[in-house]
Image (cartoon, rainbow, N blue to C red; front, side, top):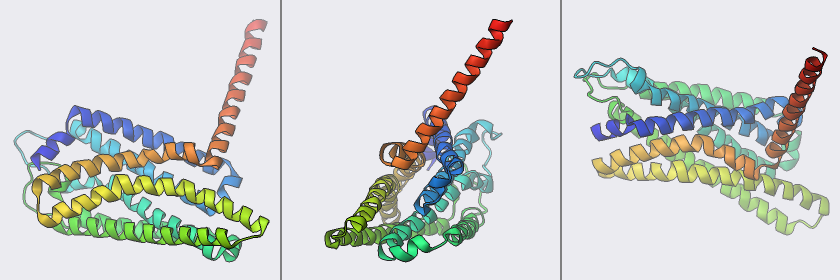
Length: 311
């Protein structure tokens, strides 16, 4: 795993992670800005979940910056061993962000299922309690994650600070099991919900009902692209990591650990571009924000010009 540590500490990877970290933080902050600025956007629970995903990705973004800057800021004396606890703790923000996004993806899948299967009760239900349940799930799963990540480590010295070399076997089992289980639940529930929606659209003849189902279909399409990116950038590398772990292929394990680290970083900011391309509401509200900023800049320039003329 020393090669993995050397690769992670290379200037190219550090620069890449700093760029991705800032992109994840700034890009997802715009999503949260839309969420807090526009009441109409907050009225749909699927949009609330998108905002919660953005919050999770911001946490990952900060984690990426911490991981990238750690080799530059950590005062490690050459020839001495690393502190395993600190090396694992530095990766906690990224792992926590991934953990929170997994919980939110599960909520998103069940939300789509409820919107199709129990659509009359779905629109009438106050969704504040669902937000509370998600936040409680974040906290509980975050505490469990912290325990497996930082409090099951070995007391033996470590000559590298790569997280994969310092965490316990118990954490590897936990990480792989939870990741695969979450993937199965998300795609199982979501596929079932989409299957129900297609059947409903084929059987519905009412114009009003068909219009409402078409709205649901558009929501499904935008969320499907997000889930597809999650599958490509996280689930597929995780499956390869699981195979390498089972067959104890150390070279493949090291290479896959690097790949899943990079793809997880990318996954934190790819949603921004998907929303700009596929999500009509976010595009609409971002355009409104940009127009407001342009108007305020024009107003400021005109005021300054008037003051200069008077002077």
